[in-house]
Amino acid sequence: MPHSGGVRPSNGKAVILALALATVLTGAGSCEVSSTPGASAPSSTSTAGGGGATTGASKPAAGNPAAATAALEQLTVAASGSMAGYSREKFTHWIGQGDGCDTRDVVLKRDGKDVKADAECKILSGTWYSPYDDKNLTDPKALDIDHMVPLAAGWRSGASKWTDEQRKQFANDLTRPQLFAVSLQSNRSKGDQDPSTWKPPNKAYWCTYAQNWVTVKSFYKLTVTIAEKSALTDMLATCK
Image 1 (cartoon, rainbow, N blue to C red):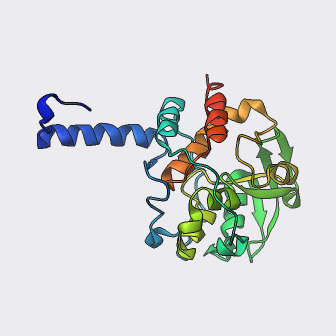
Image 2 (cartoon, rainbow, N blue to C red):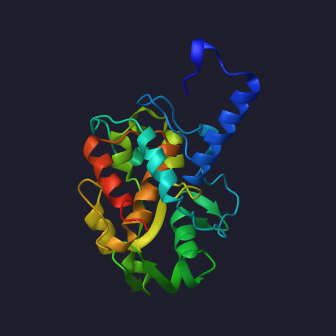
């Protein structure tokens, strides 16, 4: 915010400005933003699944469209990075989450209705709605757990510089809108693509999908390409 004569705002004004900014970012899903590619990474001390029971996890909610649009403008635009050195093994996923359940089990329980599991937390039955393709499913084998920002897409936009522990947090994040139970077909169709090359077939979900994507990229300070930003802008324009 410009101020005349190069005078810095008083401490009181600085606090007010900081609080206002925090309020905007909270609406976008407690996002953090960075103006420098790869400037920061998730704290290795906040890794998801520290061994405590989280089987009662609630589904993360998307932020509001205006906040997501503002957060998108703050993301660093950069060319897609190299895939050199990438492997899924560098993103340890489906870690133990307590009560014998791993991250995948927790998401299936969280996203489904009337979900039943055995003593070892193997999911036996339930009903699930796949928002990507507007399908209702009853067979847990017909479901995949999708990473909203795919692991490879994260690698190309900054995660290649993280530690293995930070990548584990990203791959098992039950707090941000990063993990969703969806139909196997829609997840395989998406692969590691960003919104510039793949969007959910269910156009009614574009608004929420874009908000979730921006929330995750903002929190983890990942970059976006020009084409990706354009696609997200178009998707957010469908919000009503």
